[in-house]
Length: 269
Image (cartoon, rainbow, N blue to C red):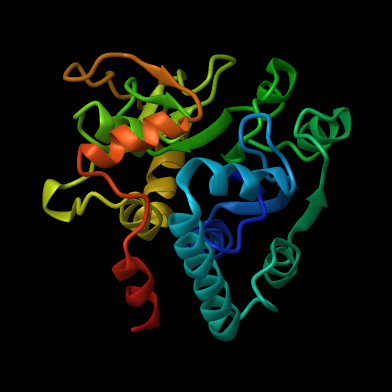
């Protein structure tokens, strides 16, 4: 039986709810869920209150207000409908009867020791931390990661933003993690349909996380069977960091939007 652990940051807007759905799918597939490891939120070198400050200064006040309204609406909606005590990672772990661990960094020796001690086969990962070589080697088969881009293009941060700015195809990839960021063997990949692309980055992430549970399970199965995909030959390898204010202006000139009012109204329906 394959033993699965999850490593993720606490994100009540996107991640917590989809991980609960993913757990249910994994249990239906007879995987053994062992533990949930919570890492701090991180955005490049920004942590804590510096993250919203970066969003406000880079995207501007209007988009920051819309993003805040979106987040509040999403969190309230999910807490009212959640069966997991408000949807915190700790409560989700409790509901599924698995170990909950909160750490300051995924590269802590205690995390490595825990993974080894519990004979974890795969760690499914949605954290912004760079995972060390020692930690990556702790599970038997490795770490499986989601990246919202058509790899090998747009490795790094804000992949939709850069794909739109550079007129490149958009999508989501799941891969086995390596020491180099977003460069491990490809397990599963889906191209974002042009018919669904409104130009809104938030709308794109609606698509990504709506399908996340099924996609992550498929990626885990591919990892178990060592069934890797060849890199997409239609895109060139690239890496980008955090956008700057001038990059946001260029993104908007090319028809991109961080968030539409419709993205918020859609949550209320």
